[in-house]
Length: 139
Image (cartoon, helix red, strand yellow):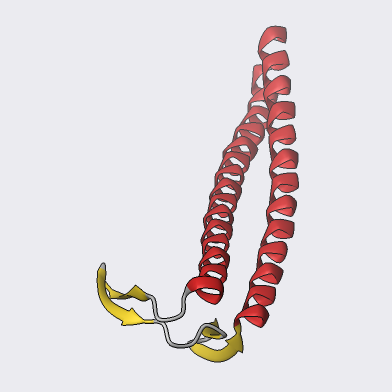
């Protein structure tokens, strides 16, 4: 009888390993989304500040590897924004903010979907753990 249970237990253990991996992957994706949304929120705050009080202000512009140069803001109405694939376009600050808000909303929907998927994975993990505990108690 113990030989009959072994393949079933092995299958459950394998499924558990897979589910734990999926759960970790989903958690990492959620963390990445959280960081991106936070970054985009900072961009929105910066655009608001530039539009309202940025004229002739000296700002630090990142040039890579933690290095900056000082620059003066001369245009408080437009921004050059990346649209993907190393392509950038000029847009009004208001249009840029609208696009950024759309990105945030899209990311938040994705985060919600991922959280639902994580709940499903965690529910299956609990179900398997209960089965294995019941199997051990019956042995």
